[in-house]
Length: 399
Image (cartoon, rainbow, N blue to C red):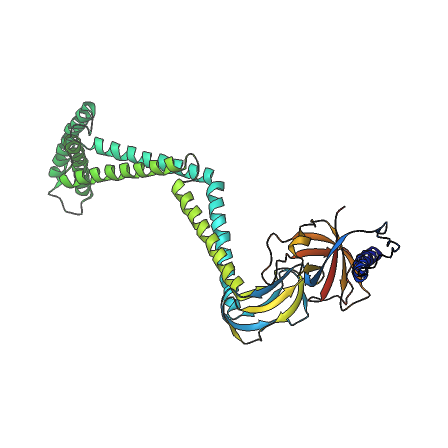
């Protein structure tokens, strides 16, 4: 390829010399042997341009927030891996602690939401049991209210039986009193007198109990008793209503309100983690890609502003050549994929092959109408090829 380019240059020079010789001949008409203008068989037309060596990828890095640079972990010439921490601002530990706390809350929020769904069957069973118990309490309160109302405390048969028992009890009291009266004149420590008195007392107690029971059968609650009965029924009804609502909410799955609250908690935790991550990221300068630190603009301990250039990171393993003076006439003749030969002013013995990978759609600013064209080198670069070197590019034109 290098020989082809030299041949093309020789051929172009011969054309120029032939033109100059014919011009210098003046008016002489002496016939001359015509020059051989046939190009070499291996001639390949090219367009030539000057270029500059650049990394395929490079960037000027800066902090998103301002502060004091407390840790500068690199220096010029260091190679770093993608994601490596290059420099840090103050309060990094506080930012990391805040991120850890936010991540812990996120774990808890996710667990709470998962528990709602995983324990749905248990919550449903508990709600069903609570409803059954509440209904039992209401049944008891209703029954107690009914049986204490007038006319509902006992049946007619029960009342008739109680009245008959009262007659018998009165008769028993009369007989016990007669027996005691016959012995009442004896001394108080007389056993027969004591037994008669005990029998009389027992007969009276039995009669009084029957009277109280009969009176309750035929009576009605007092105002205070009725108020208590009404309150017990109302409380039981309210408990049933509450447990019914609880059961309706969970019978088909988790409580929608609880799910909504858990989801809101989870969303808030996720937002808190993102904010904490951003806060930490603003205090750490990380390598956006693997490369070499080419320039460092600050020193450890300096205060920097948001967006202030801190360092330049470049991928020096993958260099390209970008043309600087390819005019509009020449650029119109080339296409992406054309082959090119690259030589260097500083390295006369180095000649590399490359491929056109990019043609700018717009002319660059500056003198003349020039279009930057990128040539990716197909060969391993010698260590002597460096960023910023001047290069000469011969781009082959398609036949």
